[in-house]
Length: 333
Image (tube, rainbow, N blue to C red; front, side, top):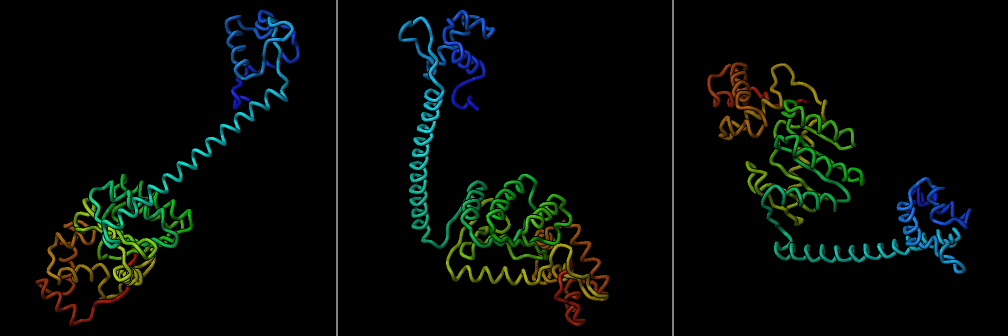
């Protein structure tokens, strides 16, 4: 432990020898320690710098070892003084950081009138997510619409872990299609193990994160979520966003929950496909919305048309309405 005071093992041995045998000269000390005279000279210099030895008043050619009660305790006192000075420096730095952060917040608030803040680029978006998550104290809710890669999941996990460790509640909704993406499925399982609540749905409105029911982050263009985003505040807007989330949450199913559609009834994913196609979306757009491949969408549509006995998508929509095959339960992953 004394190495914290600047004493290595050899210097400590030399100091101990001089305490017990005060009449040794440098040659005898070198012999006692088993080192050469050059090395013992370095040791003596170190002990002098630490004020643990000094020349004898009566015979300056001999060394006097200062009592441990005085010498070592003074070293501790010096360390404590340095620590106190370092603490004061850290406090001044903390105050400067707080002042700078306040200045930045004021600038951001004035520049964006406290309502909408625009972000450009992945770094700016992720940094803002980190800031908002770190400031959250109650709950973070999120629509995770896009399939994340392993590289993008790792920083997300760090942000989520820090929030959960502070006791912040986390509710997340994912597309049912995550069953086709092992890395996302693994991340969702980890979230559940950490105490987050996760539900799935065949279809989600748009990527979105809401922090403490007061600030939302969402893409400017849902089709290019990594390029730009906006941070939105304001009671009216947040009320609308929270309503969208809560509605989707109430219809979603926990991982592994829910039940299959009854015989002759369309499953939740089938309903989503027909609903999107009825809105005039192309197969490509439907695939992006559901987070599945174009081939999967076309295969599903062909199966649905066979199941319904129809020859066109328009006919299929009419047939579904006539038979009342839509149901409200979402199928589990």
